[in-house]
Length: 573
Ligand SMILES: Cc1cc2nc3c(=O)[nH]c(=O)nc-3n(C[C@H](O)[C@H](O)[C@H](O)COP(=O)(O)OP(=O)(O)OC[C@H]3O[C@@H](n4cnc5c(N)ncnc54)[C@H](O)[C@@H]3O)c2cc1C
Image (cartoon, rainbow, N blue to C red; front, side, top):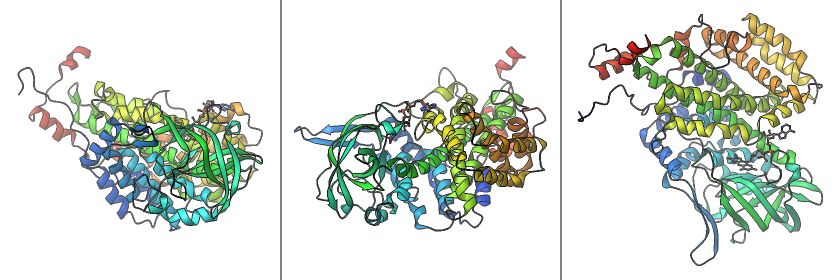
């Protein structure tokens, strides 16, 4: 013991457990969306990601942030970003698990499997997943230039992580990013001023020279990017490699790295194109729909990533409150805390359910219902799940009290989660843009309303609040929905689909409490306001990361087996 005091009643860190095994809601959602899926690889990944060694890499990659080196000591431009070795260690595991490209091989359930892996990895470290997500997302768009797709496709899906800044032809695996946002417009990319002028034709198709800038271009050490630029035929999409086929470095100047709230391990840059060479992907003037094929995939990842962060925050909160005693018993046994934890557990499971459901649509591109659900659920899931993320993180952080707010050299994972949350809501289409995109989808005809009704049908008749909610929804889904109502509609579609999914793959207690609170209005305006009739025990038990820390054992360990009342109990009693 130290001279002044003994440290006790402080929980052990949550480490050394299998993230996949310990996540029952995810496993049930997987069984529903991909019944025949072999989960052995996810099991292995979950074990790797739960080790304290990987947690140390996650901490170091966030503390030792990327550094830009624009020039060498002789004054030559270099335009490289240097990362801590832990960043590369994380990337190696993510690429090794195929989170960046494997699903495009066309095997059944591959997108769902990859989605689950992406969520698990997010629980360890979300920001290195930026280039991983963009590499995953680029394939459908890149296929519009068959020559590029043929040459780059195998390297984009290779499971070898090759961090070297050398021509792609010399690399065993590559990554790709995207550049749309300019200073004068991010949501409204039609305002892009970067100019593309024709420069000839070669094996990769129509070649152009680009002059202009991008105000945000994340992961600038990717091997190539899809970017938007203006041509005489209008805004168009281009493939822009960092190295040119002749072995020289392309004229992409990295001006600065962004000093961001979170997302620290990832570099986000401002760049200029000084006559950089780029090859057209898709037709002139069709740049926005072309690059949005990529954007829709990364929007899925925003929903998956936020769901993963929610799950991680919940797991830490459950683990902490099971070991921390206050007022004579573990926090997790205190009724007010049980309400908070159960409410967070409902939100987390609903987010997992909706984002995996969306991922499933990519496994069935020829199924008409799935195509409509993809169009509907992409903006809905991106809007609602990401919108809930920050509030969720704050509440989970509060479960840890003051320790939740402390960074301690990157050890404070809750603080990292909290700082990370908003980015998924902002980038790739902020909240309003997603809600407006939902209206755009609805204007395409009545098929989507019918598809939504079919999606909700399996849950009909099981809960009165759900039935009322689901019956009212189709009348609100029509072409005339005003922009003012767009967010409310996106929220309500999300809630209805989440409830329908919980009915199909969660226990009755979860479905019941979700419907009663979120759809039936028996709820407050903060987490922890579920009605007292809620089956808190079942909901919390289901959400516990496994193996669950035993509150009794923890209490025995801390207090030598004796019940000991906290002095604070006397003060408030
Ligand atoms: C960490 C990070 C990384 C990023 N990485 C990339 C990247 O790699 N590549 C890239 O291209 N971009 C990237 N971005 C940029 C991001 O995609 C944009 O910031 C985002 O799309 C919003 O654009 P903006 O910043 O220009 O805001 P604006 O377009 O000015 O929007 C501001 C607000 O106005 C709202 N709004 C816009 N139009 C309407 C409307 N018609 N009705 C109602 N509300 C509206 C938006 O929802 C938003 O809330 C990144 C951003 C961040 C924070």
